Image (cartoon, rainbow, N blue to C red; front, side):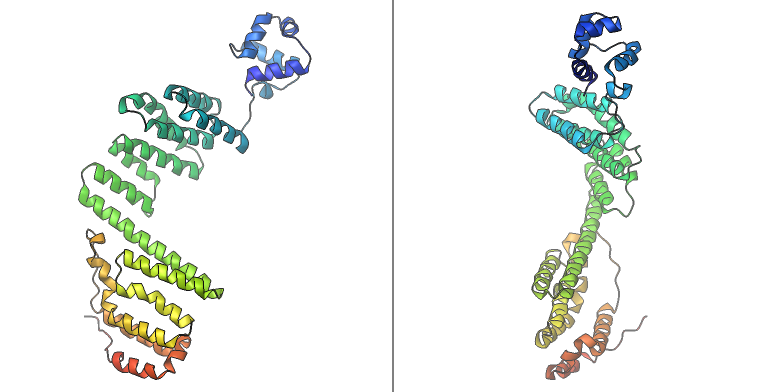
Length: 353
C-alpha cells in the first residue's frame, strides 16, 4: 500500500474521523483529506507522530519492505501488462519509472519492467522512442552492478539488444565482456555486430563456428538420450532417437559415415548380426565421408585441419575393436564374419610421416 492508503486504513480501524486526526496532529482536516487522497504528502516532521497516533511503525507507515514477495512482483508486472498496449507510451513509461523509484532494490522486478519498456519502444519510431532511451540504458547498466549473476547476464542481454536495435555496434560490442570466450552466445552476438558493420566474412565464419558447435552439442545430447533408453531396455525409443540423430547428421551435412554410426550401435544392442555386418561394411565403405562437412557450403568460411591417413586409422582401429569386443562376439560367430574380415583385414596400420 501507498502511504495515503495506510493512513486511511488505520485511521478507520481506530474509528477516527479526519477532523479528529487533524486535531490530534495540529493540522487542518483538509490536510488529512489530501494525504488520504494522495494529493499531498505529510511533512517529514509529522511522520513519527502519525505513526504513533495510528499505532504502526514508521516502516509500516511508509510501506517499507526489504524485498517484495513473488506475488507482489507478479501483481505489479500484471498491472504493467494491462496498460502496456492500452495506454500511451508516456503513461506506461511514467508508471514504470515510478515503480522503479519506489522499489530501487527489487532487481528482478526492475529487470522485467526495463525489458518490457525496451520491447514496447521497438514499436515506436526512432524519434519517438529516443526520449525513453536514456532511462532504459541507465536501468540496464545499473542492473549490471548487482551481485546476482543471473540478473547480470539478463541485463547484459537486454543492453546488447538495446544497442543493436539502435545500431550502436561499438557500444553493443562492449556488452560482450560479460560473456566468457567459451560462451557460444558471445560468438553469435559478435557475428551480429560484424554483419551490422559490414564485416561479412567475419560474420559468416563466426556463425558457422556456432552452427558446427551446436551440432556437436545437440548430437551428443541425442546420443546420451539413446544411452539412457538402451539402459532402461526401451529399444523402441532408442531406435527413434538414433533415426533422429541420423537425420540430424544429414541435415548438417556430416556425411554417410556419421549418418550410420549410431545405427550400428543399435544393431549391436539388438543382437542383429546381419544388420550389424551390413552397417559395418557400409561404414568402412564410407569412411572417407567422415570429413565431408569440411567440404560443405555450410562451413565454407571455417578452416579445418587435415589428418593424412585418418581413414586407414579409423578402419584399423574399429576392426581391432570388432575383433575383441565382447558385445560383438555374436557377430564373430556368423559365417558372414569371415567374409567381412577377408574384405577389410588387409589394410596396413598407417605410419606417421
